[in-house]
Image (cartoon, rainbow, N blue to C red; front, top):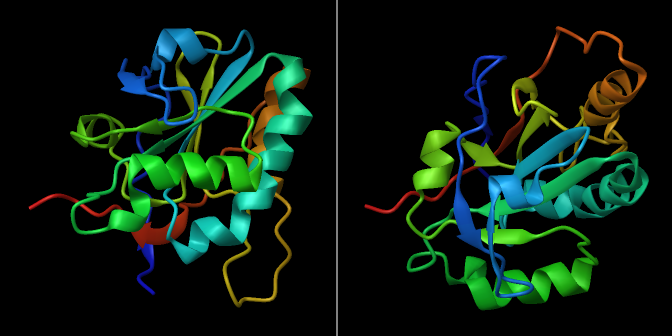
Length: 185
Protein backbone atom coordinates (compact mmCIF):
# COMPACT_ATOMS: atom_id res chain seq x y z
CA UNK A 1 0.00 0.00 0.00
CA UNK A 2 1.62 3.25 -1.17
CA UNK A 3 2.00 6.04 1.36
CA UNK A 4 1.87 9.32 -0.57
CA UNK A 5 1.68 12.62 1.39
CA UNK A 6 -0.32 15.73 0.54
CA UNK A 7 1.44 18.48 -1.40
CA UNK A 8 0.15 21.10 1.08
CA UNK A 9 -1.20 23.85 -1.19
CA UNK A 10 -0.28 27.26 0.33
CA UNK A 11 -2.77 28.65 2.85
CA UNK A 12 -4.70 31.62 1.49
CA UNK A 13 -4.92 30.11 -2.00
CA UNK A 14 -8.25 30.86 -3.67
CA UNK A 15 -10.24 27.73 -4.50
CA UNK A 16 -9.94 26.98 -8.21
CA UNK A 17 -13.36 26.88 -9.84
CA UNK A 18 -14.62 23.68 -11.44
CA UNK A 19 -17.68 22.11 -12.96
CA UNK A 20 -17.97 18.33 -12.55
CA UNK A 21 -20.65 15.66 -12.81
CA UNK A 22 -22.06 14.36 -9.53
CA UNK A 23 -22.17 10.58 -9.86
CA UNK A 24 -25.04 10.37 -7.36
CA UNK A 25 -27.51 12.76 -9.01
CA UNK A 26 -26.05 12.99 -12.55
CA UNK A 27 -26.17 16.79 -12.19
CA UNK A 28 -23.17 18.93 -13.08
CA UNK A 29 -22.07 20.96 -10.06
CA UNK A 30 -19.64 23.85 -9.83
CA UNK A 31 -17.63 25.10 -6.89
CA UNK A 32 -20.10 27.96 -6.51
CA UNK A 33 -23.05 25.54 -6.55
CA UNK A 34 -21.65 23.54 -3.63
CA UNK A 35 -20.06 26.43 -1.71
CA UNK A 36 -21.10 26.62 1.94
CA UNK A 37 -22.18 29.85 3.63
CA UNK A 38 -19.55 29.35 6.35
CA UNK A 39 -16.96 27.01 4.80
CA UNK A 40 -16.47 24.42 2.10
CA UNK A 41 -14.71 21.08 2.59
CA UNK A 42 -13.34 19.36 -0.52
CA UNK A 43 -12.12 15.79 -0.22
CA UNK A 44 -10.17 13.97 -2.90
CA UNK A 45 -11.08 10.32 -2.41
CA UNK A 46 -11.71 7.16 -4.43
CA UNK A 47 -13.50 3.85 -4.01
CA UNK A 48 -10.67 1.35 -3.75
CA UNK A 49 -8.02 3.05 -1.59
CA UNK A 50 -7.62 1.37 1.84
CA UNK A 51 -6.89 4.77 3.41
CA UNK A 52 -10.26 6.10 2.20
CA UNK A 53 -12.13 2.93 3.13
CA UNK A 54 -10.62 3.31 6.62
CA UNK A 55 -12.15 6.80 7.09
CA UNK A 56 -15.39 6.58 5.08
CA UNK A 57 -17.70 6.47 8.10
CA UNK A 58 -16.00 9.53 9.62
CA UNK A 59 -16.52 11.43 6.36
CA UNK A 60 -20.24 10.67 6.65
CA UNK A 61 -20.21 11.69 10.34
CA UNK A 62 -18.41 14.98 9.58
CA UNK A 63 -21.00 15.96 6.98
CA UNK A 64 -23.80 14.99 9.37
CA UNK A 65 -22.28 17.05 12.20
CA UNK A 66 -21.40 20.20 10.26
CA UNK A 67 -23.66 20.60 7.21
CA UNK A 68 -26.44 22.28 9.19
CA UNK A 69 -23.85 24.82 10.43
CA UNK A 70 -23.30 26.27 6.95
CA UNK A 71 -20.40 24.02 6.02
CA UNK A 72 -20.70 22.15 2.75
CA UNK A 73 -18.87 18.99 1.76
CA UNK A 74 -18.02 17.48 -1.60
CA UNK A 75 -15.86 14.52 -2.58
CA UNK A 76 -13.95 14.30 -5.85
CA UNK A 77 -12.45 11.24 -7.49
CA UNK A 78 -9.79 11.95 -10.09
CA UNK A 79 -8.38 8.47 -10.61
CA UNK A 80 -7.73 6.96 -14.04
CA UNK A 81 -10.71 4.63 -14.37
CA UNK A 82 -9.31 2.87 -17.43
CA UNK A 83 -6.55 1.34 -15.31
CA UNK A 84 -8.55 1.41 -12.04
CA UNK A 85 -12.09 0.37 -13.01
CA UNK A 86 -13.14 0.11 -9.33
CA UNK A 87 -13.21 3.92 -9.40
CA UNK A 88 -15.62 4.24 -12.33
CA UNK A 89 -18.51 6.71 -12.02
CA UNK A 90 -21.04 3.86 -11.82
CA UNK A 91 -19.16 2.31 -8.89
CA UNK A 92 -18.66 5.76 -7.32
CA UNK A 93 -22.45 6.06 -7.16
CA UNK A 94 -22.75 2.57 -5.65
CA UNK A 95 -20.10 3.39 -3.04
CA UNK A 96 -21.80 6.68 -2.17
CA UNK A 97 -25.12 4.91 -1.62
CA UNK A 98 -23.56 2.03 0.36
CA UNK A 99 -21.56 4.37 2.59
CA UNK A 100 -24.42 6.83 3.06
CA UNK A 101 -22.72 9.89 1.56
CA UNK A 102 -24.91 12.96 2.02
CA UNK A 103 -22.55 15.07 -0.09
CA UNK A 104 -21.84 15.11 -3.83
CA UNK A 105 -19.31 12.58 -5.16
CA UNK A 106 -17.86 14.28 -8.22
CA UNK A 107 -15.98 12.67 -11.08
CA UNK A 108 -12.89 14.50 -12.39
CA UNK A 109 -12.41 12.57 -15.64
CA UNK A 110 -9.79 14.93 -17.10
CA UNK A 111 -7.90 15.15 -13.78
CA UNK A 112 -7.69 18.93 -14.30
CA UNK A 113 -9.37 19.64 -10.95
CA UNK A 114 -6.91 17.46 -9.03
CA UNK A 115 -4.06 19.25 -10.80
CA UNK A 116 -5.56 22.69 -10.04
CA UNK A 117 -5.74 21.79 -6.33
CA UNK A 118 -2.30 20.11 -6.38
CA UNK A 119 -3.97 17.01 -4.92
CA UNK A 120 -1.59 14.10 -4.47
CA UNK A 121 -3.30 11.35 -2.53
CA UNK A 122 -6.55 9.82 -1.40
CA UNK A 123 -7.79 11.01 0.95
CA UNK A 124 -6.63 14.62 0.59
CA UNK A 125 -8.59 17.33 2.44
CA UNK A 126 -9.05 21.07 1.82
CA UNK A 127 -11.12 23.55 3.83
CA UNK A 128 -11.97 26.93 2.35
CA UNK A 129 -13.54 29.80 4.30
CA UNK A 130 -16.67 31.62 3.13
CA UNK A 131 -14.50 33.75 0.80
CA UNK A 132 -13.15 30.49 -0.71
CA UNK A 133 -9.62 31.07 0.65
CA UNK A 134 -7.75 27.97 1.80
CA UNK A 135 -7.55 27.82 5.60
CA UNK A 136 -6.72 24.14 6.12
CA UNK A 137 -5.23 21.33 4.09
CA UNK A 138 -3.90 17.98 5.15
CA UNK A 139 -5.01 15.02 7.19
CA UNK A 140 -8.31 14.01 8.73
CA UNK A 141 -6.55 12.80 11.89
CA UNK A 142 -3.60 10.59 12.91
CA UNK A 143 -5.40 7.30 12.19
CA UNK A 144 -4.18 5.11 9.35
CA UNK A 145 -5.11 1.54 8.43
CA UNK A 146 -3.46 -0.85 10.89
CA UNK A 147 -1.86 1.81 13.16
CA UNK A 148 -4.30 1.18 16.01
CA UNK A 149 -5.35 4.84 16.35
CA UNK A 150 -9.11 5.42 16.29
CA UNK A 151 -10.61 7.48 13.47
CA UNK A 152 -11.95 10.70 15.04
CA UNK A 153 -11.56 13.38 12.37
CA UNK A 154 -9.86 15.47 15.07
CA UNK A 155 -7.72 17.64 12.79
CA UNK A 156 -10.60 18.53 10.44
CA UNK A 157 -12.99 18.96 13.36
CA UNK A 158 -10.56 21.35 15.11
CA UNK A 159 -10.30 23.47 11.95
CA UNK A 160 -14.08 23.52 11.40
CA UNK A 161 -14.75 24.35 15.06
CA UNK A 162 -12.24 27.21 14.84
CA UNK A 163 -14.09 28.59 11.82
CA UNK A 164 -17.44 28.31 13.61
CA UNK A 165 -16.06 29.92 16.79
CA UNK A 166 -14.17 32.62 14.85
CA UNK A 167 -10.88 31.58 16.43
CA UNK A 168 -7.50 30.87 14.89
CA UNK A 169 -7.21 27.65 12.95
CA UNK A 170 -4.30 25.57 14.22
CA UNK A 171 -1.21 26.53 12.24
CA UNK A 172 0.35 23.11 12.58
CA UNK A 173 -1.28 21.13 9.79
CA UNK A 174 -0.03 17.65 8.95
CA UNK A 175 -0.12 16.28 5.42
CA UNK A 176 -2.60 13.56 4.70
CA UNK A 177 -1.13 10.19 3.81
CA UNK A 178 -2.78 7.82 1.38
CA UNK A 179 -2.67 6.14 -2.00
CA UNK A 180 -1.36 8.33 -4.79
CA UNK A 181 -3.90 9.67 -7.25
CA UNK A 182 -3.86 7.33 -10.21
CA UNK A 183 -2.75 9.64 -13.00
CA UNK A 184 -3.41 8.91 -16.65
CA UNK A 185 -0.36 8.20 -18.80
